[in-house]
Structures are given as structure tokens and as C-alpha cells.
Image (cartoon, rainbow over all chains, first blue to last red; front, side, top):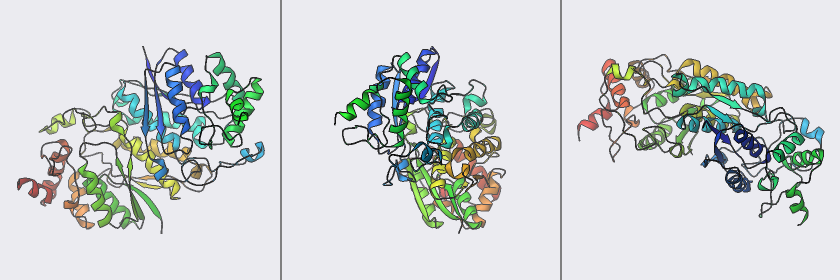
Length: 231
Length: 231
């Protein structure tokens, strides 16, 4: 069975991406980065997802990006709330984490080489997203090219690195539909950047707003939204 | 004063590279990765070097590559000893750590963006080295290209990432001479992959052999070699 390393934050996108890898016949190795994110509840969500979707292994790797800071997700900066679509479209927000996907993909590349595979899945999305530069196709292509020059296995010709981005061209509504089609329970996942101490979503950060938009457009209820309104 | 992030393992090459950055007028931010390497003594060497060379800050960042394994430096695999030049030239050895420089440069990129600089120094060398793929110029160029697509600061046009590799075309003897010219005391540094419990070099691993070759060709004694022979 062919193997794939699947980056898994515990959010809806990476969960759906893992489900796609499984549908494509890969034995999945889920990789979650514990990088000092304020929304640590997503790591618990990732554990639920990896188990529910039958990952062969789930590795939670610590990389202390909070020691570097520079983001509202890894430092005391406030997470922006209740932003309009125009505000979101206007630029890259303070929830951007410096070089996060580069660090994540580098770790995925290391694990993939050890597992003797070149297949890496990442749930980046360039449609309904927060404008992060390291979610765009041109970035992913450049990473893939670099990765094929970086490792022993690729240079010796035993592997070819391929960064799979099955969600990159989908809207959030498309992702919701695909998740349900693949048997994902959105209640397993966690999207909010600024949850309360019980892990309940704030409903107002960009991640909550984009998630809500996706479920509304797909015409299905979000189990997390129901839980939030129960407060 | 312009800033630079300098990857610093604590070996002779990265130390000399840091000294070059200082000579070029950079305020230096030294970054050492604590990745579970068996030769942890190099981290202490890095602390000595950062202090001696006046780094503005020294960050020791933990990234648990030992959880990934796949290398004699991060797993119980034996470190090869007493290899000939022909054996070393024959291929990439088991001391190769999967995607190590990609992980290191990704972390350096994250810190550089937070420090608002695009200048990153890495002491890779493609002459007297162990054949690691992520030390070659074509790899470094591909990383630089990817990095310029990866970050908020580069995409917004505020920074341009430049990966400086001042040692890439030097022999080990050239590096020894340059180190001494720049006031580096090689006694601060640590090169051995398999030191004893006191941090004394084994004298037989590839890193020790290449280091010895460099000092011999430069015609100067290595303070670490003298210490080793004192055992």
C-alpha cells in the first residue's frame, strides 16, 4: 500500500484533505505540529480525526514557533474579530504565522523520507482563505521543486516528492460538501483561532467566519455552531 | 544596523559563517536547532561561539527530529568510523538527517521575518563535505526562490530573502584559514558526531576526519585534536 504523510491541524480543511488521501488509496501518516498555537484545542481535534479516519500513525511534533512569535496565534497579539469580507480581502492578517507552512512542509518532508514515500498532502486553499502567502499554488510548486533537490531519496532517484493540494481550488462550501461525502463528521474538527477554555469556537474570528460561510453556502448545519449557540 | 539570522550548529563551518556575517556588518541573530542530535555537545559549543562572536541574540529552538529518526545522528544507528576518502565520496552516508537543512532554513526564515530581515547565513560547504544533498548550490537557490514566495514580508515587497553561503566553494583548509583570519578560536567549536561523555571528539567519524584534513592542509594545529590526544 502506498504511503502518504498528511499534515493535519485538526481543522476542517486538513481533515477533508486526509479523507481524500485515504480515498485515493494511501496508507496515511498524519502529522500535527504543536507549535505553541493559542488554539491548542485543535491538537485534540487532530487526535480524534486521525483515529476516526484510520491513520496508520499520528505524530504530534513539537516545534516551538512561539519562541519566534510574530503572529497573533503564537503571541499575545489580539485575534481580529468580526471582520467583513472586504477587510479580509484587504491583506494578510496578524494571524499569519511567519513561514508556518514552510516549517510544516519541511517536517513532513523529513518524515516522508524516513517512511520512504514522496507523497505529502496539505489542505491549503486559495479561495475562501485568509490571504496567507504560503497557501498559493506558486508557493506549493516552488516548495515541491526545492524538496526534490533536498533529500537523499530524491537525489538518489528512489523517490519523487509530490505535494498534493486537493482543496486548493475549492470554495469552503465545496470543502464542506466533500467532507460530508467522504464520511467526515465536522464535529470532530476545530477551526477557531480563539476558543474559550472548553474549546468552544468564538464565532467571530476569520476562521469561524469562513467556516460559517462555507456551511451556509453548502446548506448544511455545522455541529460546532450548534454547540457554540448552546453556551 | 542590518540584521541577519545565522544558523549556528557550533561546528567550525557555521562558526566561521557567523564570523563572516559579522565582518560584513550584520547584527547577528544566531539560531541553533536542538533536534535530538546525539552530539548534543555542539549546542554548548554554539553557546560559547554566539557569546564570543557577539551575537545580538542566541535562540536555541527545539524541533524533535529524533521522533522522526532515519539518521545515525538521531537514532541508535552506528556512526561510521575510519572511512577512506573513496568511501566518503561513494554516496550519502547514514549520518544524513532527512531534510535537516530544509527544517533549519524554514525555522531561520520564520525568525528572519519576525526580525524584519531577509538575510540568512548558513555555513554549507560543497567541497570537503559528506555529500549531503542539502548543502549544494542548486538546493540553496531553490530554497531561496521558494522562500521569496512564502512569507508575508516578501509577498508584500518589504523584504527579499537572500540565503548567504559564504563557505560553499571553500575547502576545509580554506575554512580553517578564514576562521583564524576572522579571530575564531577553533577550540570554541565542536565537530564530532560521536563524542565521549565529556564532549571529546572520537577522531574517527567523517566530521573528525574532514576537520583533521582541513587543519593539516592549512598547516595549523587543532586545539580539539590536542585535547583528544591528551586522553
